[in-house]
Length: 95
Image 1 (cartoon, rainbow, N blue to C red):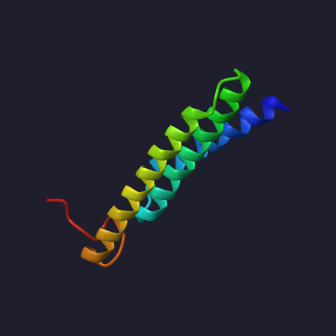
Image 2: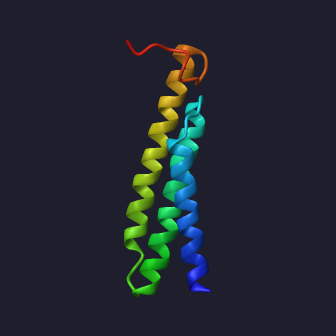
Image 3: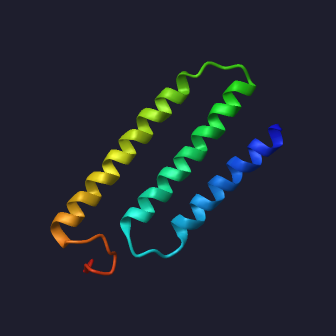
């Protein structure tokens, strides 16, 4: 039972990383893959802290930082859509 949970979390983390490193055209997909990676790390930390009988205060700190990361990503997405009209990476030049 415990091995299935570890394997599920590892697969979640691996799939999130594979989506992140593969080439996508939209910023929203990249942000969703980052949130999926954060969710898998949260599950890993929760199971690990329960296993060693530690308090869950560290999970609250992790959730605060992950929410800040999500809000920053959404604000970048909104500003990019307002300035360029879409979230395609190929639609603007970095030079």
